[in-house]
Image (cartoon, rainbow over all chains, first blue to last red; front, side, top):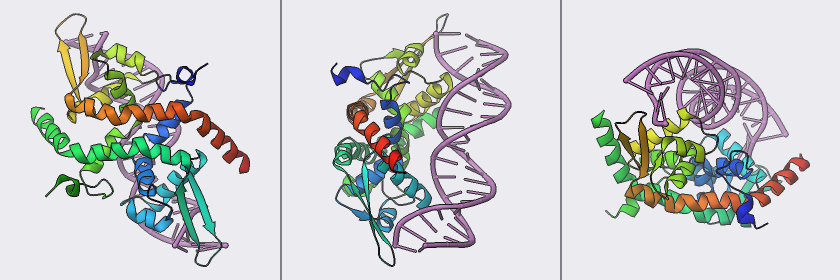
Length: 122
Length: 122
DNA sequence: CAGGATCCGGCTCGATACTG
DNA sequence: CAGTATCGAGCCGGATCCTG
């Protein structure tokens, strides 16, 4: 059975739905975009993804690691150093996610105008 | 000032962040994908996006309408008929969102394997 | 049929304090 | 430095009931 017939995110019972829930997420998008140029330390990641709390960044990275999208590299040093890196699978995810971030930036002017006119109508 | 310098989703204060939060969402992704072939009634949309509740679908459509991504067509009939349609802006959003859904379907096997191996390690 | 209104459990997320 | 632990506010989202 060809794979393109096997999975369908539109079906609530399809396992691919659980994956979509994770990747169609603003924190996931920003973390994957931030990691795409190369491996990065936790603190630098936190600075790049402006506004993310340590807790949420940790949780996001754990989930991405669990899904095989990110690899964790730990060094036995003092102070500790931990780096995160996209896996080959993670890099394939960057391909659809980067355009999503670009869309938000490229069309925010139109979106803001639409919101203003919508709110004025109410 | 060129637009590519004006907005940056990585900055928490950038307005584009609010747009990313909306579009990087599983329900948004599925609704936009469902609407891309053409205009659709509320009930058919609910059937296509399997598992979505009427409440959440209504809220998602309202938010997308507010952001100028979806248009609402109401007919004065009994029983009422309401159709939803992607705007031209909405169609440009389908371009990055459709690949995201495809990614979830195409790589779920690898993701499931990664989860299994991650969970076995703990 | 397409919703609006209401209730509410659960999860997301931020803030703070603490640890190896 | 890179977390973990805890608390609590708030949003997400499901269930139920009602209406034009």
